[in-house]
Image (cartoon, rainbow, N blue to C red; front, side):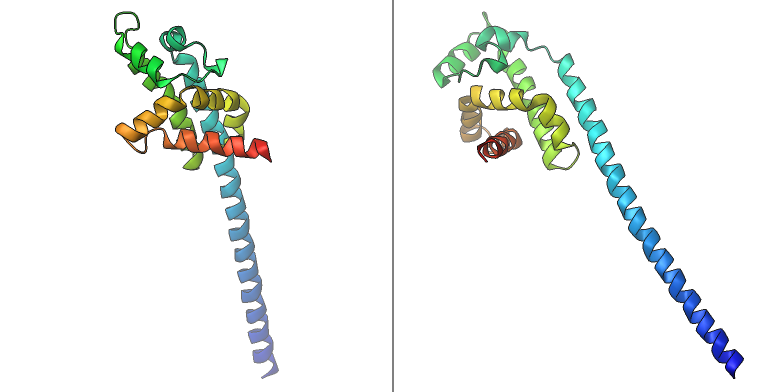
Length: 166
């Protein structure tokens, strides 16, 4: 009877140790998965940033000046230059490519695909300047075309501006 009790106690202790080891392994696995996710976010953010080098912004820069000029473009100037297809061919297309690129970065941050700090270090000034410069155009697109146009770009810019105030 003592042997049977001893073996049952030993089996119960073994099961308890096994459960503890399994719980620890699951805990570590969760940590490893989280670390891998963070690492992959950083890698994907770097890849997304490299795409910017392939964007040709010369048409947009010729029409409105460099992104970092931080001068807000008035709606009347936007309309005038967007309609002047002879002087500024493909301006609307190129402006949309530029805004869509930055919208994609912002969406990637909010969808947990890109690491915010990597994007912030590399493109914060550009995103804030772009948002400020083309805010009237973004508002126009949201009002007359698609209320969700450049939603994440605007959300990210406003978030970073709010952070800067703190």
